[in-house]
Length: 381
View (cartoon, rainbow, N blue to C red):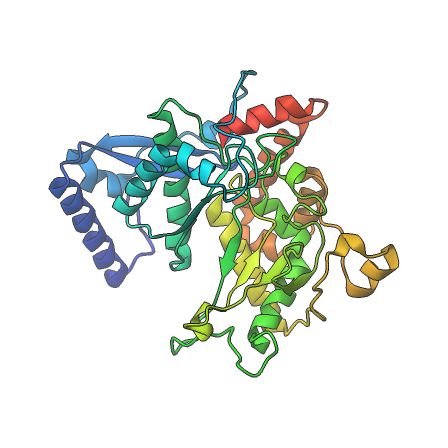
C-alpha cells in the first residue's frame, strides 16, 4: 500500500529529500537511536525510538502505534520541594539554577533553537525561557523538543522539571503564551500600520476579532488540562476575561510593544490563556483558524481595554465586552463542542477523540483535592 496516496511528484521528491537530510545528519552526528515524538490527546509528549540504521525506512513506514497510547495513565502522590524560593529576577535565582540552565541552553542550541531570554520568575523554583519565533509548524515542533529538553536536562541532574499550568497551588502558574504575527504574500508584515496608535493594522484588529469570537472554545485547545483552569484566574497575569489591550497583562489578547530597531517586523499578538498541557499543533492551528476567520469576516474587536477588567464593576465589564473565560475544562469543552469552525478544523475523527479523552480527564479528577490534582499534572507535564 502506498503510504502517501495523495502525494504528487513534487511532494514525493521533497519527502525523499527530507529522508536523505535526516539520515545524513544522524550519520554525521554519530546518532544510534532516533526518537519519534508526538503529543497525545491528553497533551502528554510520548514517543518511540528506532535504530538510526533503519531511519530511511521508518520515515516511510512509521514506527507503529496503538490508539490506547493517546491518553495518560494515573499515578500516585510524592514529595517535591522547589529548587529555591528566590524573588523574581533575583540574582540568587540565577546562581542556584546556573548549572541546570547552562546545560539546558546548550541542549536547545544543539537542536537549532535560539534562546532569546532566560530569568528566574515569580514562583518558587520557577524559571522562564523564551525561544525565538519561527514559522508555525516549526514552532510547534520546537515546543515539543523544548518540553522534553527541559525535563531531560533536569532528570540528568537529579531534579524534576515541570511545565504544568499550576504545579504548586499557592504559587505562580506556568504559561506558554502564544505569540503570533502574519506576513502577506509579498513577505511584508501584515500586522503593522505606522499610522495606528498601537501600530496595528486593520488586518491585526480583525485577527483579534476572530480570536475573541472563538476564545471560549479555543481555550479548550490552548489550555488542555483540568489543572489549566486553576491558573486562569483574575489578577494572575494569565488572563480571565475576553478582552484585548495594549501591553495589558490581564488581557487575554495582548498587543505587544514593538522593538524600536524594527517595529514593522516585531508587532505581534500574544494569546495569554495558553499553557504546556496543550497539544501545540492543535493549539496553534486552532488559533490561526480563529484569527483567519476574523480576517475573512472582518470582525471588529471593539475598543482596547487597557485596565485590569477585575477592577471594573459588572456593568463596566459588560460595557467593554469582558466576559469570563471558561472556569473549568468542562466549560471549555462545552464551548468547543458548539464551535463549528474549530470542530471542522479538527476533522471528524480528531474532534470526537479529543472531546472524549478530555471529558474522561474531567471525570477522573472530579472529587479530587488540589494537592492530588497539582501533583498528577506536575509529573505528567
